[in-house]
Image (cartoon, rainbow, N blue to C red; front, side):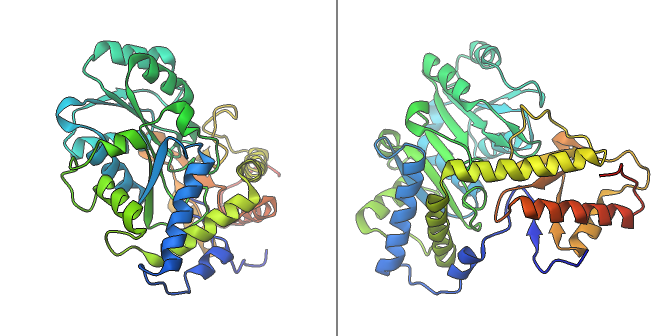
Length: 372
């Protein structure tokens, strides 16, 4: 196979970014210029538009990775003295949510569940009954540590019945799966630009229910992570409170334009076609997926390591990297696996290249596969 000239980031994100989006970062912008303020406004409006939050929510961008947005949302939207957060944990990113909330000195209860079966209504109900002090529920939508897509609509129904607030880590799912902020009555939805929006990292986005945001003035103990102050400043001046990552904002604005042009359903269909081609191709080569198809989120595929004693992930990784393909190991919650993401500037023809690179890489390290 002729060595590819393109580097493919086949990870949970960052990912392979379209050239058109990367080109936007070649232009310099003043953060207080009308053009930059217009880009910020367009991003905020589009994120609300695609999650049906225009009438009920506000979108607040903040400097940093999506994790910064999660902590900012906690500091700003959750009354520390009177709240207790139930974190639903059935994978690595559920663990990370618990780590952030605990580290930020909130009262936290963790519902630790296995990877499968998916969380049920009975699981959530039992956790709430066991701990009446719980006021908020937090869950990761697309758990890319394993590839599970969690049932956030069900969790929202339980939260609504019990008068609990819901916070959703939609970092990996936003823009690739339908999320209805109004119907879910979500207190907060946490978003990253470098997943299904196909842009680059450096900005976190929080879609927060407007009534809660309005009531949160002065609550955050952090200055730079104060979503209310950031929101009010943007509403009044159209600019960021602190120096923004201007090149990242420009890239995300272009990413939103591209997402609108393709459409959420079409983007999701492209990802699913990529995932199907990859999963079928590796199964034909004797690989096993960690999850059954009906449970898996078709933005990343997790495969069990081959039983061949010649297999070693680091050697496999190095062989793939040499060919321009970057993959990811499994997380601790899914040891003995590796992950291949199918988001980003990819289509089925790219999956054919991925499969060919896997064949070459496994042959190089002496691992036998079944005939494709």
